[in-house]
Image (cartoon, rainbow, N blue to C red):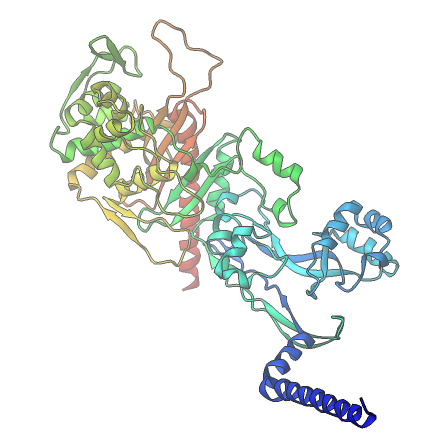
Length: 590
């Protein structure tokens, strides 16, 4: 090939390359100029979210149930390489293993400008020690954020809940985009139920970076918006008095305002300290909590179901009166037992109560009387009234996953057990034993409905939330009147089983209950080593126009009148005192 022809080929190739480059430049700068300009800005500007302080939770008196306090974190700047760090010295300074530090560094997102968090929840002593040595560790910084503190510790912890790092499921939720990396979210109770409201809106920091992703300067900061405050309906002094009255016994209590369903106190014991979760609970502490024989992480008010014992007799009495099966004067001769074929069903009083009417049967909790009423009613009619008043279904507080309890019917037994219903099972159900089970929350709803005349309010923990009526019982005024009188006599009557709830401050109406744990044959002595029966007491006060209704359950507390009734009395009296105090303060301000 001649030199002239070679030059021509080279010229054509050069022109072709130039045309391709020109076309590519035209495409990049003209056709896709805006797109690549936007990408360039994105690569140059990074956005770091700033967590927002959570809203404060108050009780009905304006007392802070939670506080926001400074939270210190030892972190590494993201552009520091592992080779620049003396891991051995750093692990000694932070009180962490080298393996832990390596794992945290390895988990970082290489594109993220957020510092790598090594240790959270530092004490003032730890902060001072790290600050004194910080010059020895390039990239080591102390971050300051705001976190939660629970000044009352274990008090009302099952109601308030706790915070911790978000779970995988929470991060998958649509609202997770508002969760800042490393921030804490509500995991239980009110903290979880109203998490989005309390969480607030995170702020944003716009940072300029170079081609290697290193921070050059902060361009703009949009401050976070603090979460909304909420006011709960609980009365803290009443809550504290109720917990103290349990005297370290396990159990649950729910106190409601029967006129609107607002929660006054919610007790579940043993309890836990939510402060342990804020800085990240250690595996050792978590294992100790979940293996604790008292199950402190169980909300006994909503997640435990037990036979209601004689508390259920109130339902049987309502059903019998409303169905016209008996009149208040209907009498049964209690000889201490009743027999069907080879089966004997005993009254708690072995020598019997003698001739009793409805009022005396409730006051002295005569089992034989209710065996007879149960025989006349049948289990399906009893179940109809039990379900109408809210038993066998969740109450809807949504603080945790609720248990439903069980109100059996003939159809239920056939479906589940594959067998017909027997009369003896009706006898057991009529006194709140056998298949029947309810939660302490349902027992409180039952008591509130009797106290207010038959209105079933949906319970709520927020003071200013709308009042919701879940149902109404079309009960005869005479039925409510008879029950109130009988329940008052349970407390003040000479032979009333709830006399330990008698108060000099306010008239209290109540009903005791004992849920059997261990049964024994008639020819066997009771085993003194066997666990005690569970104790129930439900009550409302004042009797005529009640402002508080509650249920008390004591695990292995024995008889309800002995252990549960005094707890109810202490709780009611404290609430009445607090209510009077608020009213007096209100009068003085006008």
